[in-house]
Image 1 (cartoon, rainbow, N blue to C red):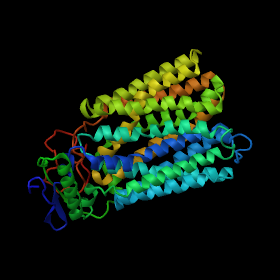
Image 2 (image 1 turned 30 degrees about the horizontal axis):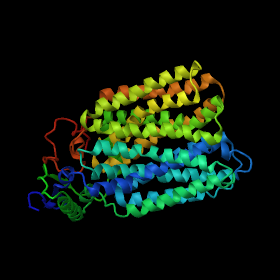
Image 3 (image 1 turned 60 degrees about the vertical axis):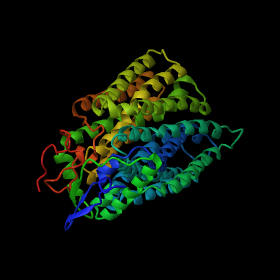
Image 4 (image 1 turned 90 degrees about the vertical axis):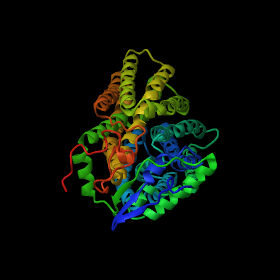
Amino acid sequence: MTAESNPASVPASSGTVTTAVPARLDRLPWSRWHWMIVIGLGTVWILDGLEVTIVGNMAGRLAEEGSGLPITSAQVTGVAAALYVAGACSGALFFGWLTDRYGRKKLFMVTLAVYLAATALTALSFETWWFFLFRFLTGFGIGGEYAAINSAIDELIPSTYRGRVDLIINGSYWLGAIGGALLSIVMLDTDIFAINVGWRLSFALGVVLGLVILLVRRHVPESPRWQFIHGRGEEADALVSSVEQEIEREHGRPLPPPAGEITIHQRKSIGFGLIAKTVFRSYPRRAVLGLSLFIGQAFLYNAITFGFGAILTTFFDVPTDRTGYYFAVIAAGNFIGPLLLGKLFDTVGRRIMISSTYILSGVLLFGTAWLFGQGSLTASTLTACWCVVLFFASAGASSAYLTVSEIFPMETRAMAIAFFYAIGTAAGGISGPLIFASLTESGVVSDTVLAFQIGAGLMCAAGIVAAFLAVKAERRSLEDIAEPLSVARGTSSPGSSSAGGGSPEKPVPS
């Protein structure tokens, strides 16, 4: 490997470092190393989808006499769901701050451990308060996962593939949802498992799968971008050099030279005050964009789809142990959306794809609400409508995570993800289940139509905001999209020749 293709991180002066690490990472071709990152970090979304779907589909069974829990269906889909989301919001903020301070790798190991422990203890629930407590703590762990993992993925995946990979990984939640839906059918069959055993084994299975993921995740490295800013430039250089050598052997050809260098002032930590000032004073339009996208998708998903089973049993007399088949179908639509549309976010562009997926899914949901109100739908046709709506909505919702993880400076990345996830999800994910649990279970058609319309309206509104404010981030270095706070003035970021986007919307006073 030539010196030109592998420039080391060279100290520029005391407290500063000049490095080509970002450009070196962005010019890497896709390789087995990238697949290891995707599998090690992305598969936890499958676990999240598995668990949330199991809980939603088992709400009716948990409420039955003999389940081992004195709980109602409304408490499962309402209170427990709201506590799960409240835990996720709290965990995102707590672990997001720690992730920016102590590194991506330490925290994505810790958060998975918290998630697995709380899931295991949920399986042992014997009283309602115990179930509620560990649903909150399970959410606490998964909220931390969102912040740690999304920041790590965006910093490790080359800019050419960042959009589609991020969307597909976040969309893989729905692979877990498919598994959870089908698994609940088996676990709810009292000819196979006793009424107080099946749901407990479902949680236990999630723990076993999570332990396998934990073993794989041990091999995922720390983010070199985080390392060189936090005084560990030599480690970052050594890590990237080893990856480059591995990829050159795999592809049988030398890598092209990196596009540029960046000089930064190294620091051990970033104060929360500076993070908040950067996000809201330097990038106010991006802050509005992030909040809009998260609130829109959170109401649609947390407020409505989690009540899908209740809608089927209430309005179409679908047996509790058969709702899993219907949910598996809409979950498939959710996963196929990011899978097929993801590449377009890197080619057609962020603004067009984000705004169109949000607006189109909202318009289609308005149409579904009208058909439902007219009594024109059956359980099967409602499921088909939802499948089409969520094909587009899932790609849009996944792009919300992508957006907030790439449009703010590197030092604020995990905390920005945590903040927008917490605020947007709290608005739609805590209030949503509490409001819509009563609407969708009331048996009154107009109440459920209203639930659909609220979700549709907020998705359309978010899409309109994206049409004006979305950032042209496709195929651009993270350092070009948002200049690091630690950058030494007068130096250029990798890819800084691209116009616009990298500078704050207005300067932050020193």
